[in-house]
Amino acid sequence: MALKSTIYKAELQIADMDRHYYADHSLTIALHPSETNERMMVRVAAFALFAQERLEFCKGLSDIDEPDLWAKDLTGAIDTWIEVGQPDERRIAKASSRANEVIVIAYGGKTSDIWWQGVRNKVERLRNVTVWSLGENVAPELAALAERTMRLQCTVQDNAAWLGSETADAVPVEWTVLKAGADARPAAHGGR
Image (cartoon, rainbow, N blue to C red; front, side, top):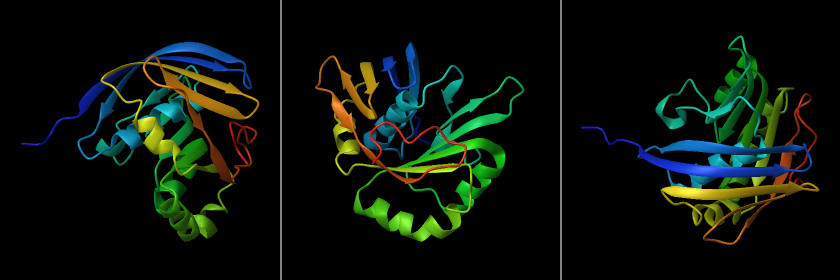
């Protein structure tokens, strides 16, 4: 018998002063049996950093044809495709052909650096792809925020972001922009 996903609930308040986006979101997040709390919370951080009206969690690890998050327009076309982790270059190229904007958020410190060196040459040719690498300690610190029921706050101001909860101090979400897509939003949110 296959293991079932564990369901997490989050009330997420976002104050993104850089994009003038202020909203509350009620999120239902499925933690796949093979997924870590780190990866799940990086997905939550990605939602907070790129929040928009139609952004939603996808099946992710449960469906190889869907990203971790996406936003579709009213016709069903994919506007934004967000991958978390270290996808291979074929998956990134496929996403690039299906979506207007692709965002990859890599994490894992040195393993992320090794991954980037392996895919860089092929990914740099894709105009609509943006790649970020989270700071080495960000994912473990985000994982410490994970609870089955969460009340989270995300603040973004002057290219810096913090994600916190009622029960833990805010985590500074830092990243390096490895590749900026031609059609991407300005390199913001802690990018160096």
